[in-house]
Length: 116
Figure 1 (cartoon, rainbow, N blue to C red):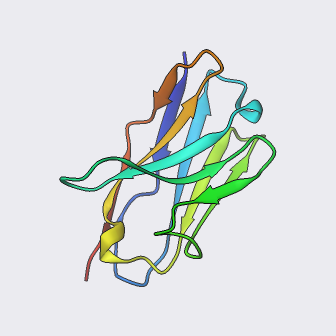
Figure 2: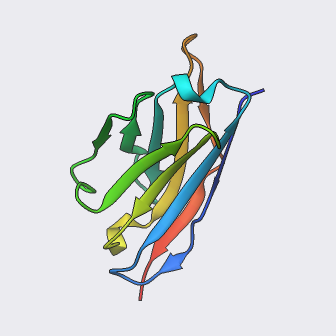
């Protein structure tokens, strides 16, 4: 079955950096667009970054210039490099994939806390 497992979340000071990873299994990883979402307490889940199967990327305005999404198809892993972190980046970060059938899969999430 499809599994997405995120890791890399942590407590970091404002201005710091973190790199999140999402390891996928049960899918032909290389053909799918992969997404990172986040959900802060009391807020709706929002899409943060997208990377297509051919490596095209797109970002939410709130993270442009600070976050970078990448993928390693040999490792079936998608990454989110987060720099210049702000307290408002505090959230649970999730990776996501939408299959050709329309079924969407989510990981369990990883907590990122930006605080001094």
